[in-house]
Length: 227
Image (spheres, rainbow, N blue to C red):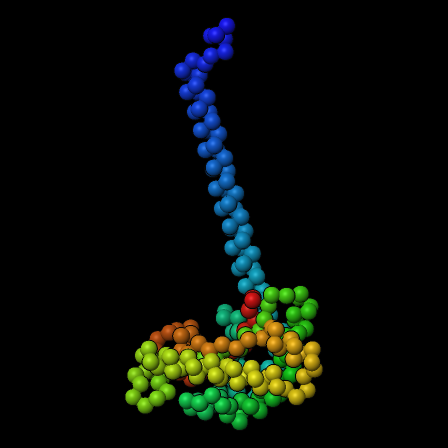
């Protein structure tokens, strides 16, 4: 009877080998499922990012394209609406300062209320509860103070403050639009932000030695982002 309930050594070995094989199989299945889920997540993220980038084109009826002073570019690759001065070697802001030139002030005055209304419409129609409009300030690598080396760490920090102030001033100007309703103002508070990047994001190229890129580096961008 004792031998009936007992296992031989070979039986025990086969039992544990089978168990190990089973667990190894589970592990392989888990890895495959994880890989598939991660791939799906990446695909959905790319699709979501592409969808967000495409939303900039819904602003084509907001941004005036034929203004003599302000150049507007819809950049599908970057997913942003870029404002630069239309005249070479001219500035949207006073050189080294955060306040507007008259050309930018006049332009923003025309688009600021439609910009808020369009963003609200997009937010409601697409139900993007986690989406906001970001106003970005960008500069060239030149130092603000005399003697600062172009493209240096000191120049970067000086321009970081400057680009932040410029983006903030654009935000303030939009927020202080006299004709905004309380609902629109509340929307601006919750769903619009401003940020400065100094010269860290030169247009398509971070080469600080190329002065020909300076004009495009001095810009304001509007971008739909995920919170």
